[in-house]
Length: 496
Ligand SMILES: [Zn+2]
Image (cartoon, rainbow, N blue to C red; front, side, top):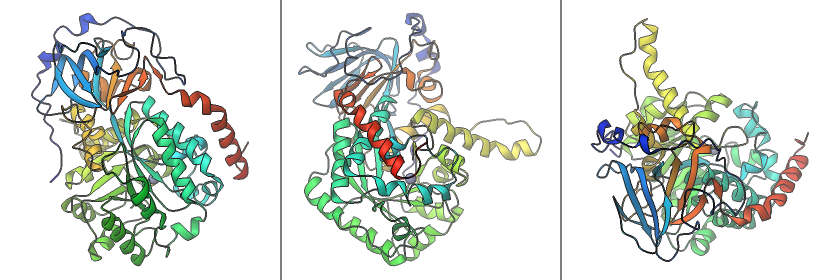
């Protein structure tokens, strides 16, 4: 079993209820992320927004570590050097470090979003009333064919920036507009320029929906071997490679077997959409002898309980994307089924063409739907609910360390643990919707939103400070991004 624990680290309520709230000051100013490179100077910090040669110190925050050995610390420092978390303790003496004052804030691990088609940032908000079959027909049958390599770059740059702005430091980027090698290279450039941690999941081209997505007889494009050998020769870089396979719902058994075999020959994980049109796909994988802990299953709404058991027993992970699944009618989100079966449970956004892009929303929807499912029998009997499932700390684990586990990155990120890479988020506890911080776990899991994300650190680099992204490239590319989106929509016949 690879499930995490419900352990909250042994921290008592008393521990974080003493003293913290009194020190908070009310900051009514909004801190919605803006695009610009000048956010590092103002307010509450004696830093310049960079990590500097002397390391980076997040000082005096309420630290929600998601590490069971560290737990929740009411007031502590997090010290980072060379991109690595070195120490988590009170009163760290770090002369020469760049200091971020976190005394009114909660410091947490960055969120891990395990399913995102990042390229769709350019077609944001066009699909709000589409069904899932509309999406397959219009997005994968039309829009995706109009993306040029630079559109892929801009979509991934801005889509990744949106994630960072919302406190998400790692994404699985499921790239299904691999229309040419240039498309893939530019998409990876976009992730690199954004400064995010990512598993670039190379999928099929978007140039012919029927050919690639309807009982496809086309094996995965050969370009993935080039990417593996030439673009990703080092396995532990900030951006790594996975294979986005069609899987049994969209390709023939021969193709499924060939694709998974090739991914395993390269030693990379494979991710597939499954169970949102119907069940049975996992039985196919079982019959072919292909189940394994290197497979990631996305949506999984209509799988049978026995299929979840097969995923769990084989050590697979499940990405539930509740907002899109509910909005588009794929079925009921499966967070509880996945966890109960022993699969690694994780949460993703999927597509901002249809739904919101932040993990606060997705995690709360996943938990809320699950509590509703769990409470339904009691409600239907006319009785009163006596307990609720998935506590806030567990919700936070699912959005962080379980997501990291789903991507095979749990030894590197997903918790504030010395020795791990420094992917951190600082949530402002002095805003009108977060004050007072009576319980920092609940502040992050159930209270805060994108507007409270003050500072974001990826691999030790400060990518957001004082509520603004620090990346100058965004301002430089903004006009090109809007022009790209306009052209793609126009050529797709979707412009107003
Ligand atoms: Zn998807």
